[in-house]
Image 1: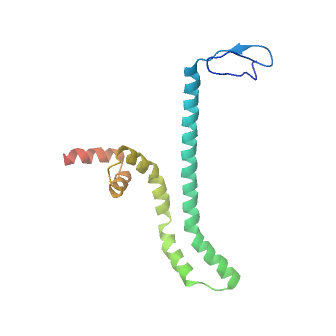
Image 2: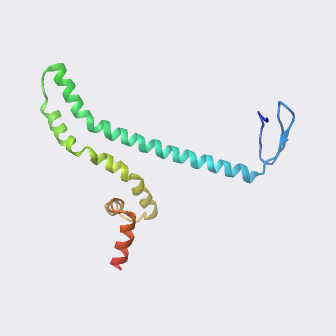
Image 3: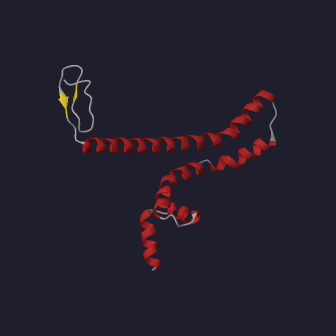
Length: 139
């Protein structure tokens, strides 16, 4: 069992425990760093996507929750909150759908930086295979 092994690029370091040493080529360390960076990037993307799903849920549910709380506490119903609730309840799935399309939209924006937002939103909405078929038909 080797523990507490210190590794540095191209150097040999003594382990404080048993005097063993190891030499690691710089290419191995750089590839390890790339894997860590890539893993961190994916974890961050998942965290952002999860946050956006949660935010979409709470933003949609906030008006109706406030309406019910104020109705319970004061016994009054406020028209602006009822109006906002009536407008947001039927479209509960729209923010989730937009969050769902966001990764595809960002990828298309990287691929086609000159394209407009509306065009990219349209291309994000249609299936990836449909997009290629439509472009071939236009030519």
